[in-house]
Length: 179
Image 1 (cartoon, rainbow, N blue to C red):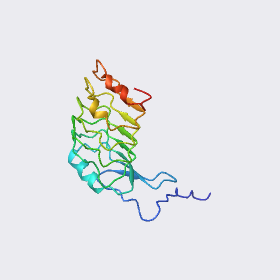
Image 2: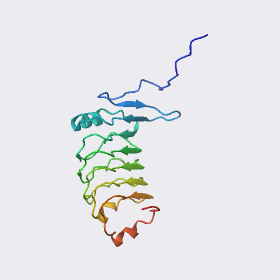
Image 3: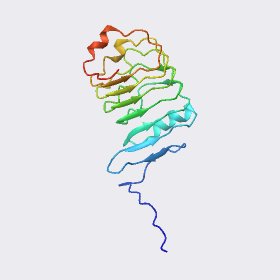
Image 4: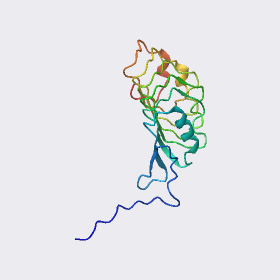
């Protein structure tokens, strides 16, 4: 019986430039960008080092179930991310303009954190984002000015928060389909 050949991995020109520190990198078939998964590293310091070391062609970044407590801005200014997954951390604070350099971002997951409020310009620069998960946080209200820049948003998940009322200005978000 002939030995089975090893699975073929095609990474294009150059090797996958994974930042190390326990991150796992992959390139989906027929995609030019990388998916970088740096989840479960349990160290905020490592996470900030990892973001600095990410290859420029990173499109999807997982930083889930780490011990991140805050998001300084701007995040990954050298990157053009399509998806950023930050769920399951301990994030309490997002700095004003933390995402302003991520104009290509379409999906943002901040679920299952400790967020209580959002600064007015937290989502500045996210004109392309259509899906934001803010479920399982500690929001009592969402300042409407924090959503101002989300002109393409279709889905906003606010499940399992402590929100008792929704501001009337939310109706200004004409593109939203699911709340």
